[in-house]
Length: 190
Image (cartoon, rainbow, N blue to C red; front, side):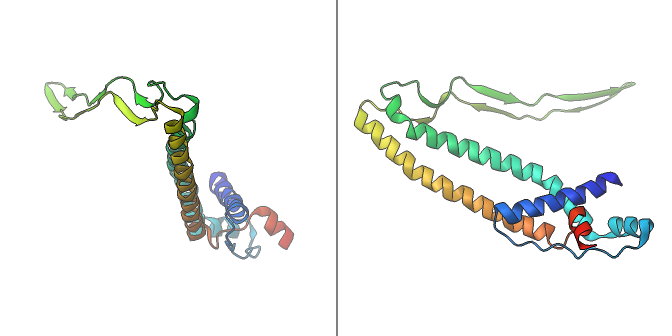
């Protein structure tokens, strides 16, 4: 019960963060009338907003992981392009896979008293050695051209991350609209 209650309070914190950081207006539900401990517990467990809040908090892990990957990959590309003038003439700089990587799924076997069940998936993948992004330039002017491309790509990456923030704001609005207010809001109201 405490976990569910704290999930609704964390969702109220997330709603406040979204309002401040993403400039959205997410209305909270009106504070419930005091119906005693059993009535509050029943309202907490039967309210759809409680479960929406809990699902939202669970989904934030995956959304955060996705955003981290996007920002890290795109940021690496931009930094590699922008810093080309610092390392021009060096063919070892860039985003390079140094050696081949091979992925193979093992065979799964379950043996139980003479009965054997096996699962063999014929899947393997190989990522060959090679450059993903090369910023090799043999002159300062070509390195500056890479850097100029990095500025343009950087501006595009900023627009992509702003678009992601806008999508996350709409998702937060959808999931946390009319959820329970925080305990501080309820105390101020009473």
